[in-house]
Structures are given as structure tokens and as C-alpha cells.
Image 1 (cartoon, rainbow, N blue to C red):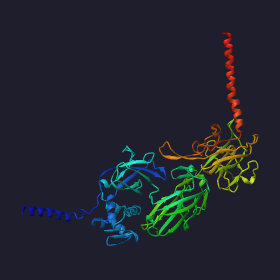
Image 2 (image 1 turned 90 degrees about the vertical axis):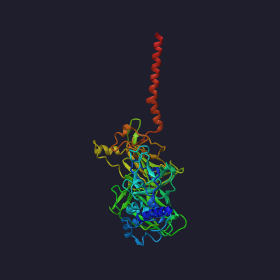
Image 3 (image 1 turned 30 degrees about the horizontal axis):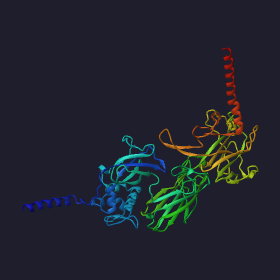
Image 4 (image 1 turned 120 degrees about the vertical axis):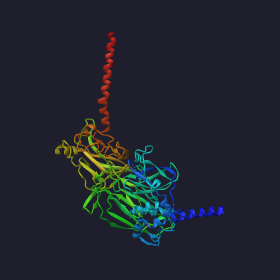
Length: 561
């Protein structure tokens, strides 16, 4: 009798929990095991420094979506109702596309579940995720902080940060609460590499025909204007289970020349930034069939100095922005209707250099010299010509005027641009004198659109008045580097802003000279051996004379001791 009474009490307790907690036992739960999440944040390869980032454990919502295991409260929530109103739905099942559905007892692979969550985040259905996930404790957002310093809630100068999170699937957000990516935190202290631009590894987009010498940093290359670029776009088969649309959006001034699969293009009216960058003028579309294997697409492109902007009926001049970066965004419309899996290509930029015709012996600026611009590529020498192209050259003793474009002072030479812009006067200078500054500018030569892949040279074709013609090539190169600035942010150091060989006395007279921004290299109008002779005369000879005087004085002193 006593055993029957005990069994009755146990049964009553079970019925009580079933009646008042009907979802007990079917509700997915977050693993509350603490785990340190360490992340190295990047943006197209550059450290994402001093940025506020968040992590949120969404294991509960993820498991529910993956297993189709929803509670009655989930199905009646405002979040569920909002999504159901926007898509076809029947019997607690929401149909995003023919191949992908969300609902009770609808099971998904891990990737499909993550795709659904990504779609919900990117289409402002975050309320449903929060409803499915629950609230409080381990389900709240947590800020990343500088490693070892919980009081500094941002990434360090190298883009590294850590958060005291929880095991399972975590969503990463930026300060604006935009969803970035997922990390599966299973092991304590594991480091994740997160690019806030390239969010999905199922697409890769890289340049294949530019050497490492031109690589300024990870995913950024410094190239010449009009240089052919070959991109490799690789799409994982998991995105190709049905006919798929691929969209390429190149930033101005990056022009697509050809794509290895059939495509269509459409000029777009987009908002143009004041500086003309990050503006898509043409969008390219490709329709890919379903495929059981990965697909690789080759895209041919080149960077141009200026493009026509139909919105403003003007030219977008890239050469006025020496530090601008350009890339192509690839978007794939795949598993979920309206959901774009996107990735961004390696970015490209270009460089240049400034020269000041100088007599380094007297530290004075000189006018009147004329030059040919040349480059050495794969042991072949070229001259830059009047058509904006490179002409092979083999005999420097018999140069024709048609072989090269005359390079003279006062001008900015942009590779590929037939017209030659003059160096503008710096009217903001406190001692601005139009006549004097125009005269000084005649000593200056600027080049834009060059690459560190090649070695360049200037060959003098006419000497300034009063000087002998120099018959040897004056070699130079350009560079682009990434550097850590004093304000703990990352910036560029390039050959336009940092001259390796300069006369500080002469540069002080140049109107648009700005240290670290616009510096001028010395373009000597004196032969090297002349400089050596002058150095002997002006430095070594006085030292020898001084030594002789000291010796003479020593002899006289010793004689009278």
C-alpha cells in the first residue's frame, strides 16, 4: 500500500510538470560552460583596430532551427508571426524557397540552419532569433575587450580581442549591430580569424597574375593603371544545389573586361561619394546551373585613371586619390530567397612618385630639363609614349621622338592618360605668390599610376641650360606600405608621401610640399662623377689641408722645444 502511495505521488508530480510546463524536455538549451573566445579581426587583410565588437551565444535558437523542435510559445510569438506574414506559410511551416523551409519537425543540416539564421539577421528578423534563443544570462550579448584588459572594450592595434563567452554557436556583431559571422566556440582559448568584409568562406575571390612584390598587405596589391588583372572566383558546390545567380559589383575605377561564363551587364544609378570611390557604375550578372561540384570563374579586369560618371556627367578621377582602394563584390543568390552570400575580391591600389630637378651641389631647384620615362619589366626596357602605352626600346643611342612622351617640369604624368594635368598652384599657402610659385613648379615632375613590381628610370633627353646632358639612366622605384600611426590606427606609407632621396633645403621652397604626404625626390642634373669630384674638393681636400697645417705646427713646436 505504501509503494502504491509513493508511485501515485511520483505520477502526480510528473502530471503537474506536464500540465504547467508542457515544453519541458523538448526545449533546446544553451551550454552555460564558460569559454574564452579570442578573435583576430581584419578588414580586407588590414587589422580592424580600436573597434567595438560583440558576441552572442545562439546555440538554443540554432538547435531549434536545425532539429525543427519548437515550442508552442515559439510558434505563437510575434517574431514568428512577423516572418510568416512575409513568406508563404502553412501549418507552422514557413517556406523561404522551394528547397528551404523553416517549421515544426523540419530538420536541417548545420549549414542550412546557419543560412536561415544569417537570412533572419540580414533581413531584420532578429526578434525571432531572440525569441527562439531565450533571454538572460549566457544568451545576452557580450563585448569583446583588449586581451588581458576587461576595461578596454574594443580591439587592440592588431585587431585582436577576447570575450568571456559560452560554448556552442556564437554570432558576431559590430558596433552598429550588423551581423558579421558565426564562430563555434568549443575549445577554451581557441583563436578565430574573422574578416568583417569577407564573411563567407564558401566563396573565394583572389587575384592570380600579380606577384607578391606588388602585395602591399594581405588582400591588397599595388598595380599600374591599365595593368591586366586576372581574378579567380571560386564558388562552393553547397551554394549550387539549385540554379544560382551570381552578381559582380566592381567599384569605380575598376573595369571588368571579360568573364569566363556567359554574363549580362547593367549600368546602375547609385549614390556617388564626393570623392568618387566605392561607387558601382555597372553590375554584372551570371546565371549558373545547379552543380554537384565546385565552380571556378575567371574574371579579367583593369584599373583605370578615370571613368565617366553618368549621374553627374563628369569624370571620376582616381589619380587624385593616391590611397584609394578598389575591389569587386561577388554575391550569390542561393539557398534562401532574398539571401545573398557575398565576398569581396582582393583590393588594388596604385602608387606614384614626385621629383624636383635639383643641383644637389648648391641645393637649388633647376628648370628646363626634359626626360623620357622608362621601365624595366622581365629584363625588357620600355619607354612611355604619347599614346599612354609602353614601347619596347633596345638602342638608347638612336632614340626617336615617337618612341617616348616628353617629360618636363610643372606636370603630373598619369599612366594611361593622354592629357597631362599641370601641377596645381597651392593657393592655401600663407606666402602664396602666383608668379613665383609657377616658376618653382617648373622644376617639379609628378608620376601617378606606377607599381612596385617594376623598376623605372628617367632618361635625360635635354639638359637644363648651363648643364651637361646626362647619358645614363636614373633608376627609381615606388612603394606602398602599411604602417601603424601614432593614434593607434593603420595607414599608408607610400613613395608619394615619403621621398627616399631629397634635399630638405630645396623641398622647403616647394609650394605643395607636405612632410609625410607629398614629398619630392632629388632629380639630379649633375653627373655622378661630378658629384664625387665636388665632394673631394669640398670635403676631403679641406681635411687634408687641415692635417697638413696640424703637422706643420707640430714640427715647429717640436723644433723649439
